[in-house]
Length: 332
Ligand SMILES: NC(=O)c1ccc[n+]([C@@H]2O[C@H](COP(=O)([O-])OP(=O)(O)OC[C@H]3O[C@@H](n4cnc5c(N)ncnc54)[C@H](OP(=O)(O)O)[C@@H]3O)[C@@H](O)[C@H]2O)c1
Image (cartoon, rainbow, N blue to C red; front, side):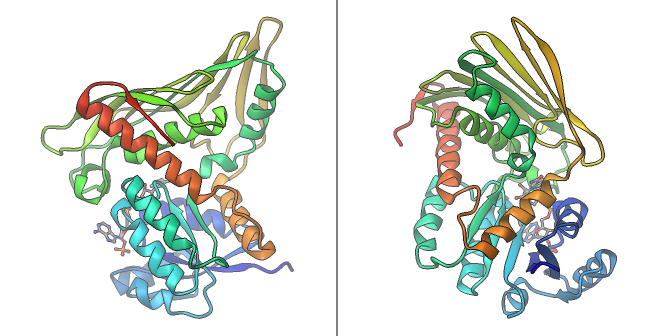
């Protein structure tokens, strides 16, 4: 049997319990050994349900467990950087949920502080990148199937007005741009393989919740534009389309394809219209294993902290644009 990295999970977050832990338990290189909650009874209950060996009643206790090599952090956004740093100090590698923090200032401080821990890996959990579809999309862009890539349009929306949900609380980093708009920004940068030079955003704030509940934006890249809409108060939708001078690629369920079904992309240009079907796969399993393998082989993690910082820089400027109602230049 291959060596597995031993993981601990900080909190009984919904995403951890429903998706990421069960997915990582299917991994070849990852073993979930412990879970911590602010409430010990919750931790014990979830540990029992998910067959996890150890339950802790505080995150610090888990960080003090010498048998844990890596931690997964699915805390509310305002706690990401704080707990990444605590985990590094305790000698753990860290996979942290997106977005890496609340803003570029936090991300930059994190990047600087990680220099003290050259042997430890840290990665932001943009799990969508681990679905094999994107390699194929990138290959087609590179070989010119759609001519020159000029526009990436993406949408990520859902409806949730529960005031107790972290997404609807500005003080913990709620709002649509940090929750789902961050994927649209990330995808645009990932596919253009460069940074935007200026951005424009129109941001609607909920008068009661005070969160940005509907955002539409334009990102001007050197090679073309990206446009997106994200929302916490629209019908659930998520897709992307990339358009070039001679063709286009549609990517339905671009960020969260079903783990139980095949997924597809549709390529159309002047000479062909075809679907490429991908067998079912769980991108959270692939993400966990990619991170564990980077630890086992002591290689770079697939998504760097510089990438996380660059994403936050764009998000900051989108907020600024929304506030000032004008284009904002980005100087990287
Ligand atoms: N990659 C993805 O597909 C994906 C999907 C959804 C969410 N996310 C990200 O995952 C993170 C968690 O999202 P979620 O929806 O799973 O959140 P959630 O269910 O609200 O869980 C957050 C957990 O954090 C702990 N916590 C500690 N301090 C807290 C505080 N002040 N307020 C609320 N909770 C606190 C709680 O666990 P204990 O009580 O057990 O300590 C809570 O269960 C976010 O960063 C989000 O952006 C990623």
